[in-house]
Amino acid sequence: MERVFQTDRAFAKEMDQKDPLKSIRDRFYVQPGEIYMDGNSLGLASKDAEKALLNMMDIWKKEGIKLWDGLFHYAGKLGEMSAPLINAHPDEVVITGSTTINIHQCISTLYKPTKDRYKILVDDLNFPTDRYAIDSQVRLKGYDPKEAVKVVKSADGRLIDESAVIEAMTDDVAIILLPTVLYRSSQVLDMKRVTAAAHQRGILIGWDLCHAIGAIPMDFKEVDPDFAIWCTYKYLSAGPGSIAGLYMNQKHFKETPGLAGWWGNKDDTQFELKHEFEHQRDASGWQIGSPSFLAMAPLEGTLTIFNEVGMDKIREKSLLITAYLMYLIDEKLAKYGYAVGNPREDSKRGGHVCLEHEEAYRICKALKEVNIIPDFREPNVVRLAPIALYNTYEEVYILVEMLEDIAVNKKYEHFSNERSLVV
Ligand SMILES: Cc1ncc(COP(=O)(O)O)c(C=O)c1O
Image: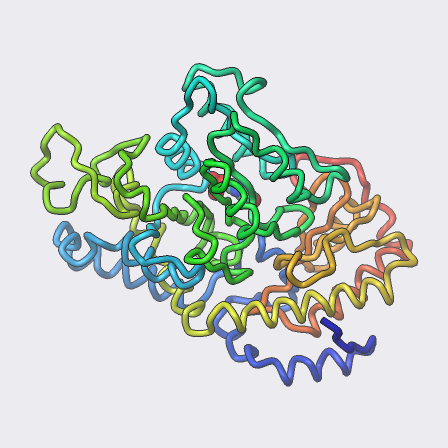
């Protein structure tokens, strides 16, 4: 899409004036004097999240054990509230576990290797925890990951070619796990095309939505994947270590969970405490142990904001503000060795901008010194996420000014590009 931007600060202010989401910023704890560009790693706290958490504390204080009466279906309720973000049926979503645990849960449920079809297909750019989980799942079934995990390799270390993924869908592949948005390059994979290709070949497929949920709208009624998992602490701003999401396509409700626990038992008989597991036939049947209400409650607050604003408006602003950032990088920073590493087309890029520079590590340290919070990803990426709900165009303008200053001003030269444990 053709967008017209200008390089001066007055233009950024004008964009902020016109921003239909500008009032939402006040609902977040934006720290005075700080520019937070890391909401794709850990989203900022909101007043809505805080209120929901305090309300949960209050319920606990006042009701003790009686709280179960009102909260027995809380994980399912949050699942229902999350379903519009991916246009799924409400009973296909539950809030439970962590991303990594949910990968184990979904794979151990749906991966049923046979002599001829036993491989799991992955890519080599996904976040490592996905790969660790997949490798351990094939090992649990008695295979060597070198033989049973088929890896589609990126040609350039940035992007995954969907055609290469489809080509790798050979008859020996049983199940696929891919990221919807790549955590480094921000590439969006075409879920609809890849899912359809997998199903045509009799292969099951699931998606890791960690960098997609709350950043891009998704339509699971159309895509029809087998499963999906996601964290809620990035764009969804539900807090550090907040409880994750799990989508199970209703066609798999008949399956028995790979990792069964009493919270996956049928609601009606759970408290009969029998030793025979009776599976609850909806996504909540993939819970394992007791839900962690205090770690879930903030999500209730932020989902209120997401459902009030709607993913279409969030995506609209996200595309505009990231396009503005890319424009300023091209106009003002390219001459200093900075380059945009994410795809340019709207349909191919997620909520963050992948800024590449050979001294990316040093630049991140210098940015933090001036209260601008990015994050660094090996080998040369500064990830910058102007979040639709709480970042401003003027913040993007100041960020680019600082990136320019870091490139030209000797006072930042003492920051080293040598890695230390904590960036
Ligand atoms: C794509 C992806 N998957 C998984 C995770 C992390 O998994 P967990 O939430 O279990 O720590 C991350 C964390 O950044 C991620 O980017």
